[in-house]
Amino acid sequence: MKQKIIICGAGRVGISITEHLSNEGFDITVIDSNAEAIQKATELYDVQGVLGLASHPNVLEDAGIKDSDMIIAVTQSDEINIAACHIAKSIFATPTMIIRIRSKAYLQPSYVEYLLKDVKVNRIICPEDEVATAIVNQWRTPGAFDVAEFARSSITMLGVSCKNDCPLLDTPLRNLVDLFPDLSVTVMAIIRGTKLIVPRGGDDIILSGDRVYLACPTAQIDRTLRAFGHAEITAAKVTISGAGIIGIRVAEEIHKLSPETNLTMLELDKDKARYAAETLEYATIISGDSLDPEIIKEARLGQGETYIAATNNDEVNILSSLLAKRSGASHTVALINLPVFIPLFNSLDLEGVVSPPNLTSSSILQEVRSGQIEHVHSIIEEFGEIISFEALKSSSIVGRPLKNIKLPKDVSLGAIVKEDNTILSPRGVTIIEAGDIVVMFVPVKSMKKVEELLSVNLDFF
Image (tube, rainbow, N blue to C red; front, side):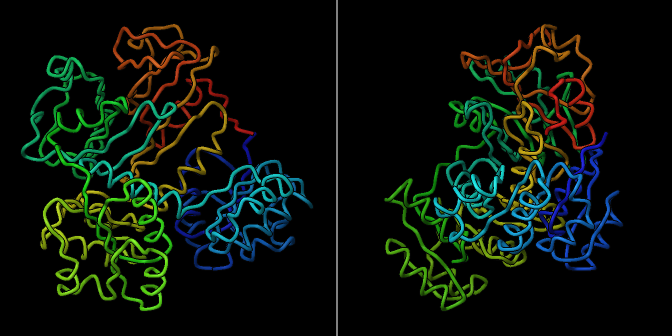
C-alpha cells in the first residue's frame, strides 16, 4: 500500500519535494492557498491538489489527513506551518511531521523544545541556517562548486569543474589509481553540458568543461582538488552582497571560524545596511547597489578574494558575480533559487552555486527516507542524489563482490566506510559487509529500484 503524504505549500521547496516523492510512487496531496500553484503541481505531477490554508482543520481533512502517514509543512508562513502540524497531531494523530521554520524567534531553545516534545514534530528544517552553512563550506573549499559530507563526516562529496588546465583530461578513470595511488577518489557522475554520464567500467574520460561529482576522504580534500587542477586557497577577504538573514548569518559564521578574515557587506536597502552595521561591528558595510561598478570598486575586490552573492534576486546574484570577477575577485559563490538559471551560471565560468530549494528538499528527503539513510544531497543540476546508507544483513549487496551485484546502470558507488572508519574505494572485488556505510549516486527515477535492492526498509514510517 502506498504511503500517503500531505505537503503544505506549493512554492519552490514544496514543488521540489513533490517532484521527488511523486516520482518514487508515493500518494501525494498538495495544499496551497494559491490556485495557480495548485494547478501547476497537479498538471506537472501525479498528485492531488487542495486549495486553502493548511492551518484550517477542514482543509487538512479535505486533503485526507485522517489516513495520512506524514505531513510536510513548508509554506512561506512559520505560523501556518506550526498550526498545521499542531492540528495534524492533536486532532488527527498524524504519525510523522516535518516542519520548515524560518524565523529565529521560533528557533529559541524553549520553543524548539515545545515543537519537538509537545507538538511532537519529528524534524525542524531551517533553510536559512542550512544555506548559510553551504555558502561557508563553499568559501572554505574554493576549488569546488558543490560540497557535502557523508558517513559521519569521513567522506566528502565534491563537485569540481574541469577546465583546460585539469591534468586528468582525456585520461580513462581507471587510471586514477595508478596516477594517484595514495588517494581514495571515486568519480560518481559527470555532467557534460545537459547530459549525465555515470562511470561504471573505468573507460570514461574527463573532458574540458565537464562538471564532476566525486567522493573522497574528508582528510584528502586539498590533495584531491589539486589532482583535478584546483589549488585555490580560502580567501582572507570576503565581500557579501545582501544583508538579509542569509547574508548576516554567513558573515557571523565566517567571523566565528576565522576572526581575522576581512569582511565587507554590500546592501542597497538603507535600513538593512544600518542593521548590519549595528550587528556586525567587525565588518565594513557599504550602502549601495551591487550592480553599480562604483560600489564594486569601493569594495576593493581583488585577486584571491571571494565574492558571495546572497540577495533574494537570482539575476542580481548572477550579474553581480560577473561584475565581481571582472573587478578582480578570484572566487564567487551565488544563491540560485530557480533551476532554469543553473545551466546559465555554469556556462559563464563562475564558481560556486548554492540552491536553497535543493538544500531544503534534501533535508526533508533524508527524514522521509528515515530507514537506514544517513544523509541525502540533491546535486544542483537535479539529475539525482548522493545518498549514504547503512548496509543491512538483509540486503542482497552484503557479502558479495560488487562485480556480481546487478546495480541499475545509472547508479554508481562512491565510497564504503567500515565500522572502524576504514575507507574503501569501490572496486569489482570489494565486498560490502553489514554495518558498512555506503555512499552512492542515484538518479531520482532509480531510487525505488535501489531501495528494493538494498533492503533499506524504505517504507519509512
